[in-house]
Length: 292
Image 1 (cartoon, rainbow, N blue to C red):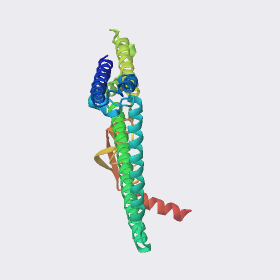
Image 2: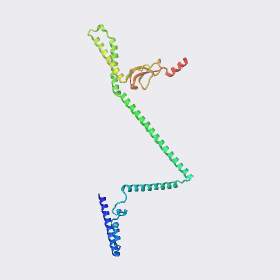
Image 3: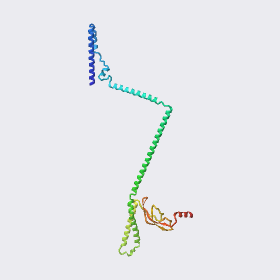
Image 4: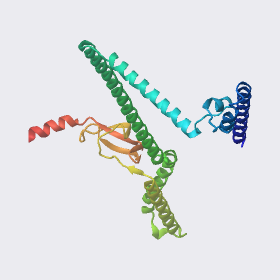
């Protein structure tokens, strides 16, 4: 709307200016040559009604362009594209001129690039080595943590089982003593009926001892009796020595307390008596080789 109004206003101003110029021209011609006024009057309509021919300067004075906005934008874009193309061509020409190296310069450039590649390869190898070491360390940590977790579950009852070993020893000792004493009792002289009670008590102690051994075995606690075995400091605890030349020296000849194992770990070493004075194991082996 504003543009149309401005264009109408500009056209009216142009028409008024043309009419003023034509009126002034007619007055001058009439004063100079009255006889020629009629031909001038015949040409007046052409002068009074000239075709509206607007130049670009008139519209530019009012802030308008003679071309449409779309055309002006396309022309500006084409101009910018042409300028950028020329600039890129100039830059490429300058780059080509700058890249005019000699053979020695090219050799130096190649050597520099080779050195750079070698340094990058070394850095990559170092990073690979660090990654592999970190991965191996993490694997070790995972394995160690898993092993510790399994051991904690596996040996969780160690302290409790160790405190129950004395109870098991007392039951075993009571059962063996009662059996020996019960065999010596004369049942024909039993007037009070104590023999059946003692027999029931012995059976109860035996059952308790067996049940406790089953519970121990369920949780990985097992009894071992090292009689007539070779003395092993990791599994046996020597209390005394027994002179016995008939057996090799260092043989377990007597067991005071049996030992207990928790899975593959010694829960309590066996208390034993070891022989001395007999032939050693090495001497026995030599004698066997000679006899053979």
